[in-house]
Image (cartoon, rainbow, N blue to C red; front, side, top):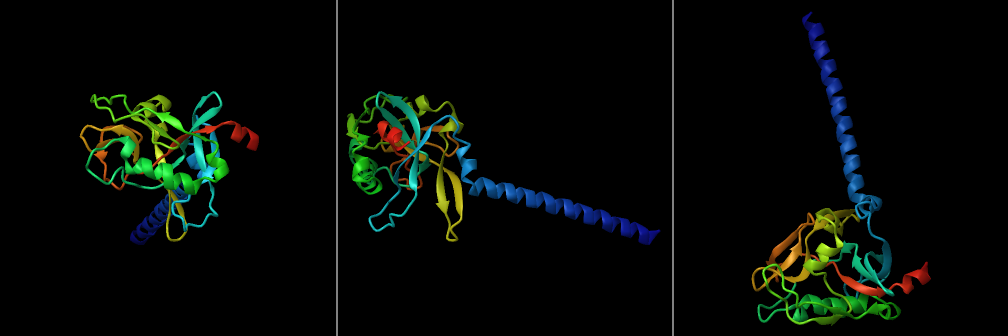
Length: 242
């Protein structure tokens, strides 16, 4: 009887081990799909039309043979679309100096409207981008404005615009497409800048990785916060492309 009991225990242990292995395999298959499958990421953005425009080229010596950038259509006015990049493009400080600060003189604005603008869009595509009147004089929830209005080809959304165009925190979440040394792709939730001043003089409001709005903001030299650019583009360009 004693040996039979040991035999039954071993059979039950074996069954538990098999069940455990099945659960582990299912878990990693599901986990792998959520990281690696683009369609799974696409399903998180269900309320916006998406278009392709430009290509992500960050440096002059980068290989230009890259995939088209994807954008979501936030708004449509007359003959133009307001586009917001589907994914964040890179982490970047807002500004590199603690002197007089506003959106107009920020390093981030300079980068978007010069290097990013010139490298990521062909001349024919740049002709389709509208130079837009960007409002910065509206005060934030702490009663602080952010300098004068500007005319920009490319800009960051304000907190007010993030509240207007996204119905909830989940819809504001942005991912960064991270590629490891083995070429495997992982989509990670990241923080991204707005162009709205935070609570303190050198803080800028951000969108957190869970999509919530950080009205108090982060220091302008925080390098772990990402760029999610926006711009107004001629909608006929996309209709002609089909």
